[in-house]
Length: 464
Image 1 (cartoon, rainbow, N blue to C red):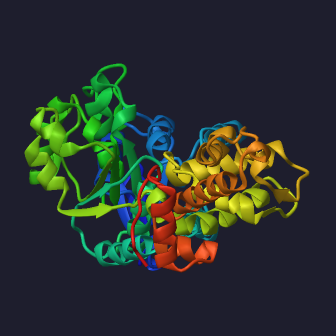
Image 2: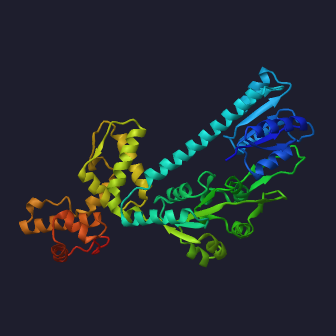
Image 3: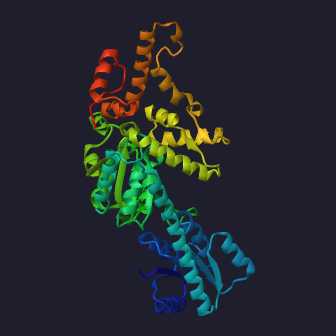
């Protein structure tokens, strides 16, 4: 792929000369003679590097002011400033404002090409690092071997290569954003932007401005363009988290924008075309919100082209130990802790907990345990927060009862009931897995459950 360079200079001969030099080296070039043309060109497509003169005649903004505007929206974009009236103070000032480099006119071709090549290389390394971080998060945080998580991965692979809109549904903390990032990573848009927009975290009064951007009229003292997230995501993927919290009055506009493929910034009068794949997520009952006239049905069907369900952690308890061990190693590495292990009893306790906060809660709990017990080599159940162990204690009913004073038969029955209740909950009611864990035949376990009148477990199934 040829790299795209934008040349901003008020002198046509300078632009033509630079363009010729760069094209001979295999670069694509664009030209702009003032701030308006430069900003419009960047809106249409972000270049890989910009060469810009500091002094621009007949321009609303000079080069340094344009530099400030661009850096607000594209902080990693390399910008090389040029000037025929430069000095050390000017060069230092441009670098402080975020320019990649400064070249004084007249410049040597070799130095120009060297600076351009290094600038693009640094930009590529920055983008690759961002992708690697995203990839690392994806690969490490979507762990598990359960049927549900394997099925999710298979569906993601099918979905990723399409451009269809996806609605990801799942409980808070179950991995909806990780799922969306994996779709992006496996898609043909993986080298394009991935922009997250949390609909629940934006005030209704600012929602349109954040989503669509804004601009104040040219010619005013405080003229400024603010790019919205929809524009930032152009050619890539935009992840709309908590879509059910989008203000109702914005939903109608969003439907029209999705249909037309173009929009206006708030305060603007020029339509902006966009090509963005929309992936949304929710942990709300959108169908109920539709009945309550809080969510538009037409928007729901436009976004929910391909529904994708992320299972809660309690639905895949068999993955808990694997995920916990992974997080333990990861957190130890992040905090430079010595290697630690989770005891078998600790893993059983983690498996028995319901995890209302899902994978996010499990990671946070383990991080808290490690920070509070930096010198421990083994993590035992007693180190876990009380909300984790109280489930185990609650299952062991009357745990303060003095079993010594009970008749042997009653004491044995009480122990068996509490013991089996704990393991049935640990395996989410799966009798086959429970029987294997406690060393009983499945039919014998069924008889024992009936005899002991165990009826307080969450679910009892015969799944294998």
